[in-house]
Image 1 (spheres, each protein chain N blue to C red):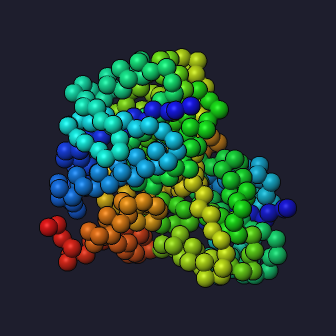
Image 2: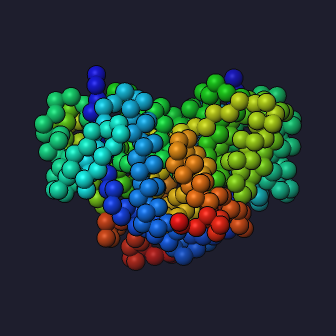
Image 3: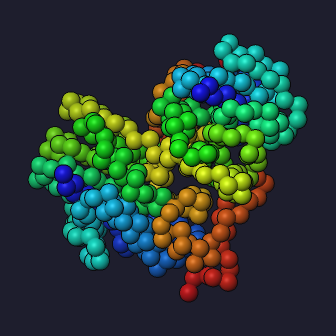
Length: 213
Length: 213
């Protein structure tokens, strides 16, 4: 079984909630290293990768497609064309490992879903793509479970913090410095980020000698 | 193998960061239902349970011990006395399932650790309790990994969002309403909590007709 993995990607001005600590140039480089870690893990688990990009973009390993339509419309058009299983997975999961991806692919159910923090969906493994459609944004975890149930598809919720931890805010960088196995941790360390402990709580700090170039 | 599970528990004025939305009486009841869900999961995985309590407390199922010393001192005194494997697990993990506990107990390593969000430790399975000691508070995940490595113990990081998700702040209640399988979700629903979606982000709201009694 060759699974096609589709990774939506926004190469231009991503992760704006990190603007307080990263310049636009840094956020774009940061998004690319997170993407590379996801591509590595997904490839390591045996998938062929296509990036679905909001802007023209080239990648050393993955195929790329330029998406002018909305995310849901573009993904659903892909699903309608495919007869083999499809993995849809977000590009901002730097704690990911090939092992965590294998847990998605190894499900005995029709659909495996990795919830994101706060009701989102970080990954979907869809065994019968023509029987399902996606509805991202908002409480998409609930929406995806309901869409599957209405279609008579069995659902497996994958219990993984590596797939649960997406990166949107400064405090999320703590998880990268603690648990990311790939190059995203090194990228942040090279920018001068390190863990700080204040009043018993763990945060991140940035060495001012490594400010944005 | 009978594993002794030790659950630290604070029955009086717990979870003060939830004071904005729960009265002290509600926070104490909330802590007890979360504890019950953890006791159920741990018992379901075959462990015998002892609660280590900051105040006198009785529980229908679990043995209880009253701890006047600090948490680390009390836990380390327990570890020094035991020759069989010990599980130390937090009481505020309402997403827990017996299956997630079994993943801890099923490790092939000397130590299995479930990290909490923000550098904490939510569970430790310790195969050789006399060869290890705990150091909770602060970045305890890093501390526990280092203590194990210095003692020559192999470490397995358990990849579970059910064990990763502890409950401290209002936004954590979202995860309970979405993913908690036990009675904690019902407790919050009975108090009038439900999910809300604003500007694409999922939060919780409380029905004012079910205000604190």
